[in-house]
Length: 416
Image (cartoon, rainbow, N blue to C red):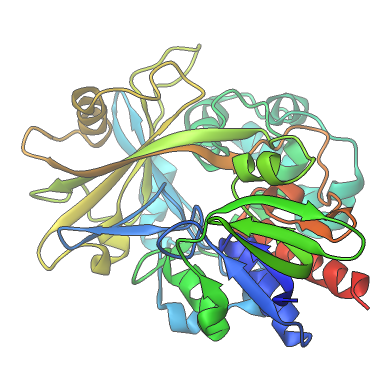
């Protein structure tokens, strides 16, 4: 045998799986086809700017992050607890009055704190804040339907919650699982989403560190043949023989290397711009609240000045702005000029002097989380073949890490 276990894919799930298996005393090899670890969690450094592949954040409140990640070593740079909202009468602020007391007056003036709708939001979140396990077990529906049932039907929903959650879920139609969304909102309430000072790729690099040369980059797996005695992994024309294999790849790899169908996903496009001056000094995500009655003022669903939250994302005295479009819309692949126009409208600034740093099109950014929510899918495919990834748990960093852990425990139980 060349190893006890071959893990295919060095994303968050595969790395957590490999780490746990080594802790259990198993001999592990991790095969990654790319030039670096991370999977979807990658950071490109372009002209000194740190540009994550997709607008990603790390919530330190996730239980799996608290348990298996050295959060302090990542030097997290948090975003503010609130959003900027473009309306026809100006750019409004809606912020958590406890965490952002300096923004309380602007939040009150925004006009979004209507008692009836706030009561509806309280009804919508009350159960998940008190006992998240009851939400996992309760009947599920779509996000849009759950808002209707709770009476969240006014401007706060249409102009703030709907566009914000569309960007988080990569779902502009409100068809995602309401139960899953409630769990995410609970994490937003408990933690302050942030980015590592050196970019999101710092997270998988930390996970990979103790594995050392067990991780082999530029290793393309062509096929896996699993039997009850052993697993043959064909990689770049050669063969590795192991007692078990774990497929922790992208959705296409799951379909190619296992009997499972390709997981359904949602996609996005993230643009990264250098701005001569920051359009805002606030480290808040900005939305277009003019989205209502199915009209579209432009392709951008969220935008943020990354260098306001994390100055290390840009060279000194320079400013980095992200803008995200969703591929479930006809304008998801909008041209640069249209994206810049819309970002300018959201912030109320001139973007003619902005420069595009890079653009990332992530066709499989997140697994589809449709109702009814299934928080655990089997990781054992058969014989010595296993699978992990956030498509087997929940579409989140939490889900990826937990899935990797579950796969490792299942492999260890399977092996003599």
